[in-house]
Image (tube, rainbow, N blue to C red; front, side, top):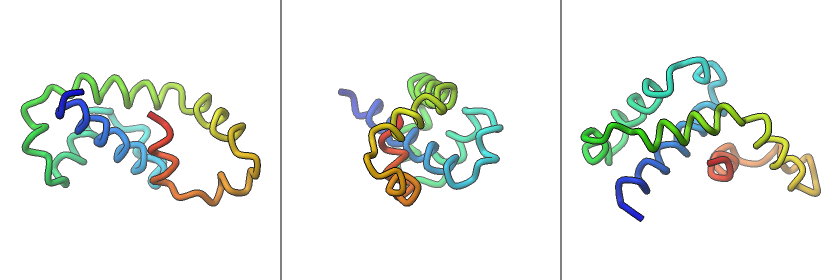
Length: 96
């Protein structure tokens, strides 16, 4: 696995986490969300040369299927209360 793809996966997890915290961000363009995160992260210099095709496709796929993903996660928890009280970062990691 390439280092660039690993960084882009990490970028998507961060984007999903941000969307879970701020629901309004889901209305923004995917590229804008990703660029905002890159500007605020230390590994941004490695990603600034990338066209972010992989990260964009991955994040768009998660956003487009978010209801299905949430249903799968919900059905995976025996105790439904634990899903609602789970850390947003942990849930973001499960989604991509």
